[in-house]
Length: 293
Image 1: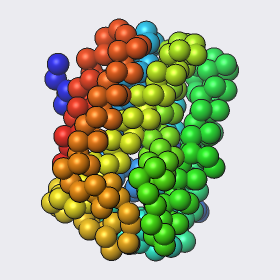
Image 2: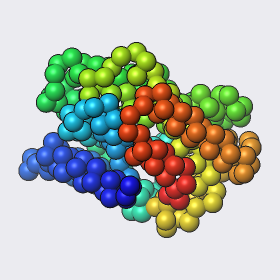
Image 3: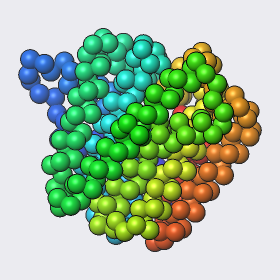
Image 4: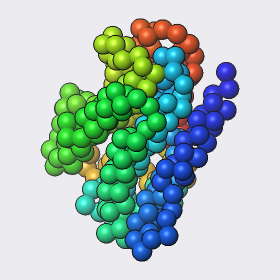
């Protein structure tokens, strides 16, 4: 299969829907919309929406039934990046090869643009053109994985680890919340969108998102040490600058990559549990393991 073509098709579908659901409006407060769209349209692989829609297809659904949920998930991911880059968090000036939102629009508008994306994401979910049962389940999964015990909790742990030295288990717990939680939501909501929300399917989808998320974050750790800054689109070496413990600092590059590869294989095992045409998700999983940005 042509993975690049598939990713491009999904990306174009998502970005067209973003323009429809979150357009620039000529209002007095449009600056915050401009800032939010600046980051939301700032590139990126749209991996979370892709995974959600592909899980929907895998489970026998129409990918368009997952599209609005996929846009909402990407909005939440983008808000987290805007806030991540703020001086009070990771203090990064570049994101995806251009100035971070707060460098382009100021810290106040960047903060509010992140708040806007988070809030509008749930408005979009609530009005998705699918059954109310699917809407309620999707909102529940999205809020629980993006919220206190998911991404937010992971962000708090990440900040605390700048001052203390976590062991590998504590680091893995943080990665599960900060990164894997949204991928768990992506896979699970894809299944829900297709109407295949039995316990076993959702368990396997969560297993996929969990293992892929850990592998994804470990590869991020590796790229922060090894990547070309122009290709990566953001500064490298920020983990060391911020005194962060990572899988690379604990295990070294080779061992960290071996762990990521093992986790990717466990994600593939979860796909086998679901069955069906898993070729695209197999390709995506391997692509993320070998990425350079």
